Length: 405
Ligand code: SAH
Ligand code: TYD
Image 1 (cartoon, rainbow, N blue to C red):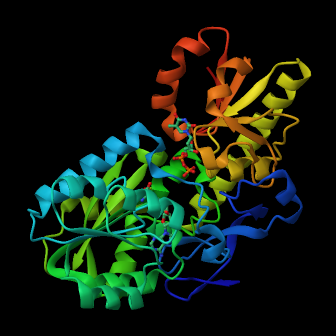
Image 2 (cartoon, rainbow, N blue to C red; image 1 turned 45 degrees about the horizontal axis):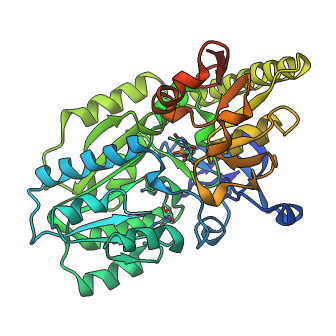
């Protein structure tokens, strides 16, 4: 039995992925003998509806001065965050007297839009290397983990916030109650806390099990977020689906009773109940679907190997750490992974030890098949590579099921 991080009720895990390394720990050859792992199991709390990891590595093991994820590697995401910022500017009528705070601003991908609109803003980003990139853009950043004590500190040196924003960060934080306390402290009466994360409904529907890795301690739904907000005298007032990261949800939270609640909230909660996100059964059948993908993908890669085909992978994503380690994909089945992120290149993938090579070498490698680990960027990547792939090279994707195209 495990204790729920939200409501302290007991629950049993519904899936056990075995021992997993840190998803973003791309290592040099000499570091491979000493890899840290943790037992990755996921559970569903029937009381508050939160889906969560049972165990998570210490935050300093994941977020530090060598953090490997730089937000601005996707042009699509640059546009997405520019649009996100524009929507907040018009929703809250922001101007040079306003104040915006972003939790987990990474390389400044979103705050750069507020800066160019002369709207005062502050980023909180504990991973020093990515924070440095934001600071080089002229963005003010505090390089610490956001929590209630830091919020108290910020409240002494800044006005309260018109908007607190966060993307793909809230689901990383097991001490989420401290975050919500901090939001309650820092949010103006008419302020909004808007955050987005991969959406549980999409993960279940698409069987995108690879959204589960060390950093993703929670898989949120409107059901679980409304429960959590309520505990902190806050309220879920809007939900807006996003297509990013394979299907995300943007949640808007306000002080309880101070903003009109959109009809979208109840509509989504009813839909979640209709598809059973509040019942154990949905999670049991998810686990079966994951194992079918595993059998199909390993079967395909083994057949291609026996036929002497060259298979490489594209995008050394955090998600691929779950795929390679749970499925047992090693360099025997996939030669290497090509990626544009310099800090990942000429290293080995966590656990599976597949070499990660610079994207610049992708085309000369002349593969027969390319396993798309960055499937959430499929549209952008397949368009970019369509000339090269032509008719004689093939993509392999595995979400929602194994497909060769
Ligand atoms: N918002 C960006 C980055 C997401 S990656 C995007 O959507 O692309 C998650 C980021 O959250 C990392 O940069 C990590 O350092 C940061 N992070 C993790 N815990 C945090 C905390 N408690 N406070 C602020 N940032 C945190
Ligand atoms: P992403 O899917 O955004 O994240 P996660 O780590 O959360 O699973 O990661 C995309 C990775 O793919 C990143 O390492 C950069 C790489 N990438 C490319 O190599 N080429 C591309 O065209 C794109 C869009 C991404």
